[in-house]
Amino acid sequence: MLDYFCRTRMFCVTIAALILSTAAWAQNSSAPPPAAVSPQPPAEPTRADLLRGAYGPLRANNDLLSYHLDIRVDPERKFISGKNTIRFKMLQDGSRIQLDLNEALKIDKIQLGTADLKYERDSGAVFVDFPEALRSGRVYAIDFYYSGNPVESGRFGSITFRKDSSGHAWINTACEELGASVWWPNKDQWRDEVENMEISVAIPNDLVDVSNGKFVGKTDLGDGYTRWDWLVQYPINNYDVSLNIGNYQHFSDQLGKLPLDFYALPEDLDKARKQFAQAKGMLEAYQHYFGEYPFEKDGYKLIQVPYSGMEHQSAVTYGNHFANGYLERDWTGVGISPRFDFIIIHESGHEWFGNSLSAADRSDMWIHEGWTTYLESLYVEYRWGKADALKYTNGYRAKVKNERPIISERGRNATPPPDQYFKGTLFLNTLRSVVDDDARWWKLIHDFYQHFKYNEQTGMNLTPIFDQYLRHPAIPALELDFSKADGTMAYRWRADEAAFAMPVRIGSQDHWQIIQPTTQWQTMKTPITKDAMEVATDLYYVNVAKK
Ligand SMILES: [Zn+2]
View: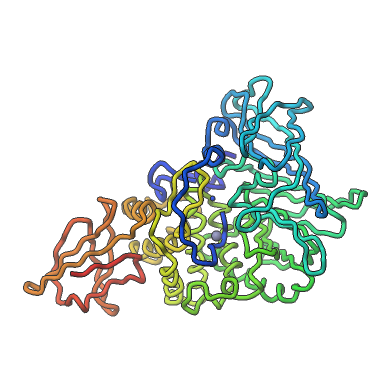
């Protein structure tokens, strides 16, 4: 299905105009980088980046309908072979389409029916040629056969062939950064998603595969291998498609009608039973704010893996040491993070922001990460109240660099800087303070998620505020100029956006007053002196300059 701005059709229309005000809008690594990362200036895009990142005419001429990925995984040889059946509808007449497969993998053949198709490879892109033009409006299915040894690379390895401590094979995928075409052929971009997907994985009989969607069944193939079949009944991003092959033990639970399935290695089963109990409270909190879990028919799964974690749709992967905090640290440094398991709370939050609602281009990845980081604070607020949530969120200030805009250049397959997480949540907290009415804020973010009715709901022009926080490195500075002689104070915003205007609370903790500064000087009488004047910087992510 062709999603212009996000993952499921019902969520897709006007938010673009809104949240990402101008032309651009629909990237990896689910969990924020755990160590301080100094953002690199964006490198000039390579030809491969542009082929992968752009939604060019040979992608735009078709709309994905479904995939059936049907593969065999040989743990000893670290070898994958099989095919992906790709169904799509043509949107224009055309005789060529662009798909993607990493250069390390071999194309065995690509067929339409029984006819072999010609193709041309250019870095990671595969241009498939049809002997005659495919017709607009018609549905076609091609079988893309491939094989080889996929290459481990990137933060989580993309696809890794490991062994657990008892010597069983342990094979996992987490490929948001490099893209799913690092291990299987697909139309590897963010904008267009299939409406559903079958995943069939043949593995040695003694192993278990946990992939996305609903478990359909397993079939003994009689040659030492068993095929595990999974059915994804919702649109899904390519990078969310996941293999988790290992000596997994399974236990289950239920939240209302929603099946909860948990998978851990035998030696960690007791720890998993204890730690994974946090999933229920997480689901309750997010359902409270945003409505029901978006993939009910597929269920919710939490699966132990050897890396920190990833938001694989309906199959969230977990490697946070069965301990609270993030990799055993107090993540925002203010004493709140040790109360909960960061990976369960963060990665699962992506089911709402990232998986069901998603960006169409990596440049807008803050919609996944800024929002999900904000969801962490909503979880804290739901469990422990607003004061703790504010404290938790403001703990992120120390991680913000303000060196590059959160929204990066479109069409380049580039990951925005880590500010997308930290500044993203501080921005949303600021927006809540701008709205300044919690009942309205809860309705707004609920409706934003459900129907994208942002503008109508606030009745404010928030575009310059979004643009300042998302498209410029600097945050707004409130300039306050005191004149002792006549008891007045001049005030204005210093911002890159000329039309920037945002209300803000000033005065003192026990008596805030809301003023409406713009980028033009205004003057007010005040009995408060320069030294005593406070600004509610826990509610608004701004700098203050007094003179
Ligand atoms: Zn994330």
